[in-house]
Image (cartoon, rainbow, N blue to C red; front, side):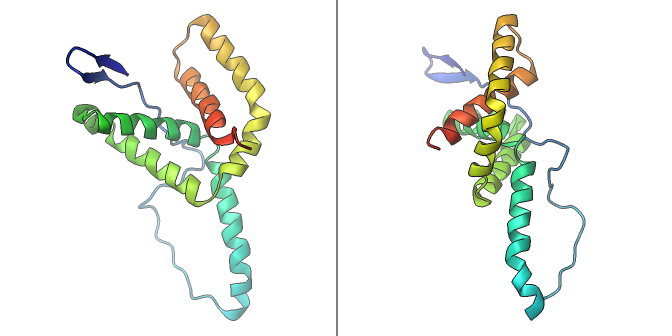
Length: 158
């Protein structure tokens, strides 16, 4: 955030990263599916199917949630700062990030993500060092920083 202290207003918010990874992200408004009423024999399997769906959703969100969490924070700062032009420009990203974050919470994906992230932290730290050493501001460096921030935020108490 670039802030004008004389005028007491934020001038610029950081760049958001699209939380959608084209691989495995569900988008609304897709194909119409039909469902049938559960029968007595299928009801027993419903809990297992729902649990598997939640686990699959959690796996799909592993790559998306770090950028989504960062974007939600940036969008909140923009809303609080009344940066309406910025919000208009990034409205779709803000909405998608909020959807990803809400889905992550509703499916209780935190434990799954933290378990996944624990094995990746050394790799992420190395990449972060490389980005800093080379002074790179690539999307991959920002995404990597978002992964580390998400790990620190979500997994510090586990």
